[in-house]
Image 1 (cartoon, chains in turn purple, blue):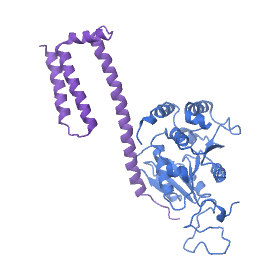
Image 2 (image 1 turned 180 degrees about the vertical axis):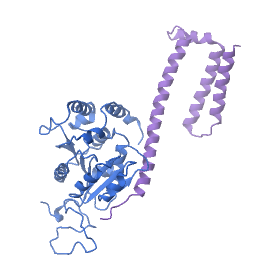
Image 3 (image 1 turned 180 degrees about the horizontal axis):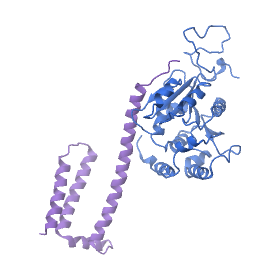
Image 4 (image 1 turned 30 degrees about the horizontal axis):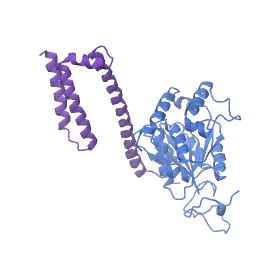
Length: 112
Length: 266
């Protein structure tokens, strides 16, 4: 086993442990965890048998497995960026409502 | 001239200044009766301000010479805008942090609509680019009763030509790019001067905190089916208001936010 394989697999497993330990009980979060588990299994397999990704890539009309991974990464990155953007907007809105409630409570009226 | 009794907006807590029965309206304790009369008593002017200490005094005093109720929303200014506005006779609501003009307008509307007797609401930029006489004319237009909201436009045939060319092109493009704006036939959706009634104020929920609220305002008009019209107004492009104005590049943000709007929970 190469050193890079050891590093990659331990990094992925460490992330898995971190994710499963974070305490959230929402249904949506559960699906995220299931998805993440699948991701980890795929990642470990791809690290151990890199040539198999090329086989999958060829099924899909892509030459190399590495290219396929790059495409997948780009899609995942765009998805993450957008969902983070929307999440930030939502937080911003809540934050604005909180600040507004404080502001309205401390309104000052003129004397004349 | 509509008399108090005929006014569609009644205000039980406020004595009608034009009184026909000779009742004493202002006691000696109230040394200076607020300006205005039955036609302005139910009007609230909403002035969002961020670091406008230089001009806010003049703007508020000018407004107060016609309208008794002015609320200035200090959007987390660090230059004492709030105190100056208060001294000039405005109600002051201070955001603890800077949130953006859209959030300030929403705060102002929420404050004004909670005041007893408020019936007509107007947004008015704090940098002195609007004329009070335009607001008066727009309120007259609203009181006609056939519209819910009147938006100022700087692109009417009578007022065109005074807007700098590049700004004119961008603003026209912004109005044209918005489907709601096109549908409603609006030419200047980013004009800061708007006059609206209780229906609009009660249902207004601006969620875009920054400068994208103008497009959102138009979208809300479209979604809620509020009856809208435009009225020609004049914008005073002073050096000050030009320096305070949003950079034209901000148009990119506005368009982008407009596209993403539907995807957010309110």
